[in-house]
Length: 342
Ligand code: GLY
Image 1 (cartoon, protein in one colour):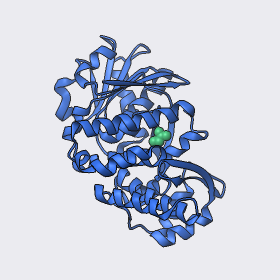
Image 2 (spheres, protein in one colour):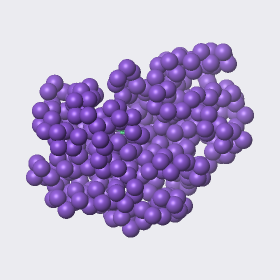
Image 3 (tube, helix red, strand yellow):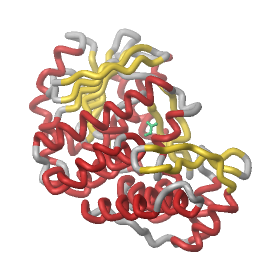
């Protein structure tokens, strides 16, 4: 097991990679704990849960909203949760985002931690203290920065993931390599087949290295005033694709990274051979590099992006693989790109 630390403004967070769900009881109080999970995770792993009340939610992005949060508050009241209650989210990104938000707001905040069960949440969603839900048309519009006391990344839980979920996690791993580590990118080029087959050593290294990159960025800029924006590489178009077509997050981010690379090339920042290398790796992994979407809807979605500032948007681009930077791009400039890609 390896442990990484994030030093947040709300407290320290310990990310334990290679720890197991069965050891969860070592990290939580012996009583007054409430588990929040989803029905898939419950179906596979309920026998490994410690004996505490569990609130089970549905799956899918559509339930990541205030209605679900309200249902959970109701259940917490019913089980008598109070200020000393410890909440544990056991699941993927959606469970952890919701559980973290509920824990941060119930009775003005109670202690919480996560057992992260998907590749996407282990390398990204559960690490870094972003908790929240979607609101109306806006993704992650309501939320807080608040660090979980711990995140257990149990690599064994990945064995029951559908292939599409593995691909989504790999998209975020490619993102971390592209923005911060050329050696990790080259490793992915050599070992993507073992990664797809969930080879233990390869997946372990990919999860460790991703968390090294992410935790270093969050330690510099927890509240996303500068450096942390780099973690949004591929996400401006990615969120727009996700919203307008309903494709899974990782697939949308994959196509979004290709668009962001192309924009970097067009602006003269990135050699085209690097953009080609990124596209080729994503294709080999089996991720989409183009997504059919209606141009006007994409433009509307970009205008509703949280990263927009007036008629410009914070956009992450590349100088080379492993080296990202952020600039404010006029939305008008992106319109031309949309015509080309959609
Ligand atoms: N997923 C991007 C971030 O945590 O900042």
